[in-house]
Amino acid sequence: MFGLSELAVVLVVVIAVLSAKRLPDLVRSAGKSARILKAEARALKEEKEREEAASTDSTEAAAPPRVVPGELTPPSPGAGAPGGAPHQAERRTPPSAP
Image (cartoon, rainbow, N blue to C red; front, side, top):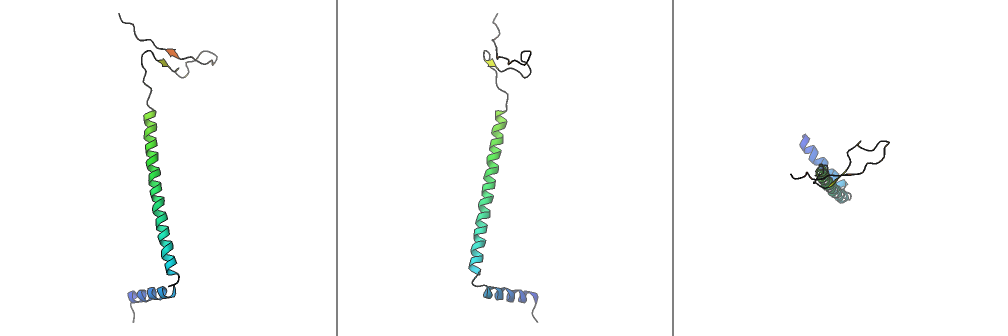
C-alpha cells in the first residue's frame, strides 16, 4: 500500500493537473501579495525612523532657553500684575563693575 509521503505527492500532482489553468494566476497573486507586504514593512520602518527623529528634535527643543545678560526675559508663570493684567517682560542688566 501507499505511505503518507507517496499519497501527498500524488495529491499534489492531481491538484497541479486539475488547476493548471489557475496556477499562473495563483502564483502571480502570491507575488503581488509578497511585494505589497514588503512595501508596507518598509514604509512602517521609515515612519518609525521619522517619529524617532522627530522625538529627538523635540527633546532638544524642550531645553530651557539660555539667558544672556541685557536680554529681555519672558515673565515667569504666575508673576503678573494684580487683577490678571498681562506682565511685561523685564530687562535684565549686567552687574555693575566696581
